[in-house]
Image (cartoon, rainbow, N blue to C red; front, side, top):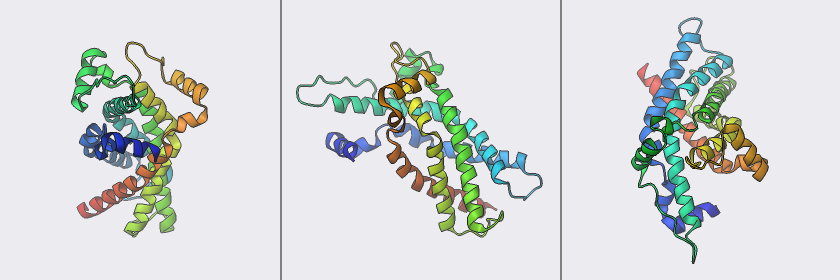
Length: 252
């Protein structure tokens, strides 16, 4: 709550959405890739047409979908993290007598241009790809597995076609919580790597970042921001899964 108050005081409501341009611009594509690949995986894993997948098969389908979306998530989140880190640095230096922090990036496209120009071309936009995969693959495996398990639990069996919207939202919300519960420390490692200075890096890689965070901040350092992430993920995934089910049902 203190972070929210300080951000509102320094930048107004717009500050709460700093760095969201890139994720918002790609959220439709992200979800389209995620659910399309998951659907293709379901087709491959299904023994016969129309037969529901087991929870274990949904876990495998989710892992495959997570691998695919990693290549989209990595560059868009790098842009988001750079803009949010810049905003945080500006707020830190905003006190009386503090040295002003220079604005390095003018927006999402400017981040992409500067990274392409000075950080090794396209490779620079995929900095943090390994921890992104380490988040998306097990995270989506957990999410889709839990989603199917909760649906079957509520339906009393594998046939979940008669579940109401409330049940679908409950399953989706718990599935979103399962995603972050499974992989949140990996997301922290990814974020610190993506904002690390290109010329004078603090971390040599994912394992080094993990060790240094653990050494300097303890286990709680790996869960910084966990509460807001969960409070965002539960309603967002409840809505997302409901939209997916309603759309799939209407399309036949």
